[in-house]
Image (cartoon, rainbow, N blue to C red):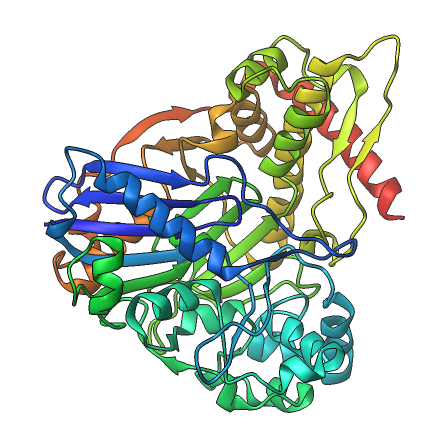
Length: 496
């Protein structure tokens, strides 16, 4: 049996086919080959057309069909993972009303901040485990205030993965995990956050039917199956936002386990069974994929928006466009720890929750025309990303009590860089285990659990392969500490 995982990112869509028995990746496809366009009509705005996600899935499946080793007729279940916090609005005919306001859009920051002030931090944090912030509920309130004609047409709102599931099955539904990431979920009452919906004047009728994260979420429509080359009736049996899913793909399911990713955005994600929270909501708590009312599994999420997107910006715009990412990593390794004083604060991709939803922009400091070159900028950018992780990890540990003793990560994106890996491991004094997996493979394993092909999480991950462990560089610890101190002082000045 074959399991199909679909990962709907903001940069691209990736699909993976997993052999259920061996756990091996049979084939993968990614589309588009370059980063997907993000529409930004104003500074701090970020939108994408959900139809582009759908078309890219179709193109990816066409690519898989052309692989002589692939037989799509053997696909038995489908899992979906997707970029979190996006808002998709449809009318009664299931047509899109407007482009999706995606995760890195900052337009609703003040709406969420005002809700936090008016409703009170005690009420919001005890019920939502977060400030309403710049999340999906606040984005919907922005549409209500600024686009009343469009708002009046709304039948249902969805997260990005819900929309893709609807296109595949015709069913309109969502999950508790998805509702919690949109800040629609009241944890103590295990129900919709009616008090926030009332405050925003949003009808609970907008919220789709709730289905389990693992289990039957609808079956592939015959007309869609013939169009995309799959069998009609294949069930969708798993759905989760990208960060809970990335943790799941690394078998991070139990309290104290930690996962990290560093794609367009960067995340450290730990699991706890405690209903704790950061009083300033700089790190956020959502329902993990295996969360149950009577068996809490909560994901503590530290997000840094400006991660891989910063590395990509440097590659495109800093005179390094002729270099591959591997060559950039080599260039960075030739520069001393601390980049000879050059500092990059990577907060240039919208409002950053870790600095209390401020949209400060990226800052490059201490640049010397006589000392620094493009290689210094590459290293300073990668160090700046790792230092921002360290900054957030300290907030996470200090405010939620979550211990960070080991990090698991996929061997991909920024974790392909030896400089980034060593900087993060050393400045955090935490080893990093690297695995041969990614989000689309995690979604495929999730489909196997949800369909009953796997009888347990243990069976689903029995073949997960660890590639290596990055240990902290103890002999260079003082150099990294000095570099971090310089970075931290620059950040403090910027925030003050």
